Image 1 (tube, helix red, strand yellow):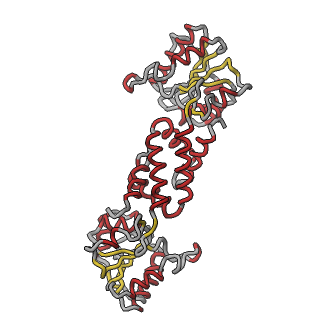
Image 2: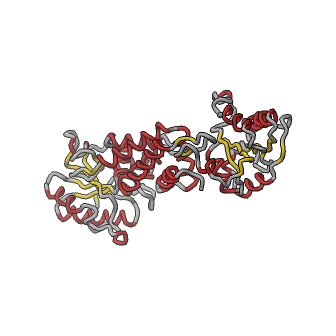
Length: 203
Length: 203
């Protein structure tokens, strides 16, 4: 082909993004080089900064550029409520959709043995320590309404029950089979509001 | 919001890409930070390299990381044929779709007074020098089948005629009103093959 190697390399790197096919990658590369070099520079710098500086909060595992994230450090958050989510994006959705003022715990996945995701990968040891510290009175399980999300919720409810902590689950109101971050705000707010107590024996 | 500033900055930089809305930008940012930091690093580097090192060929104005691009430097290209295209992507489409072995000239746009694109911005002075060098015998005008593309083609045909160079235009076979790089390969190959001579008086 008749493109400079560096342009080919850029197209290749863009193709690796989810949802970007070969034609889109080409158009993005040409757009950046022909019409928005400043935007390209800014994106490169933003990527470098984010990759180098953003890690995970030591308490809740949310993306954070400090040892402890803003929510875990905030004095005005209610430490008796702990909401467990699958992803940082789910946390964000709850923050945007609801008036929740408790704290979070991010699993970065859900129990899925075929994908090699077990209690260890999801940080359950750290979550158990949180429950054993005694501050948490309600564990709000906000995993997705998928089969794995439900299985994870069931497991977490058992963990909580064994430590005398009440567990609740977002109300079914979520479209079944969907991932949490696709839900519209008002449905999510509704489901969050009508969360119900759940025993270990309840799915 | 509860996101680290560096994550917000990354989402903002991604949103600036054409076709990427706020939700997509968020998903891309989280994908890169949660699942593909290596891809993010590679993309940052590819962007930096491309922006710093890729300029334009001094002869044909194609994207190039050398003073003169690969096609202009190639000894086995036919210097008597010069194909004028609007964008580097159009050049690429012709290379992929046809067996053309001549050279190119990239306008980086088309005559469009409302957008401030006149003969100067499109490099017509350099194109005229190419025509006056005497090597070019046919100017193949491969601007798009849009109103501005046609106006540009008309103007170029007049430039060529005034210098005794034959001008041809891609055959109408292109879907009218479309930009060149959306055309499927076989249609483009067909149109390229049946290009016809065009006088200054013919639209």
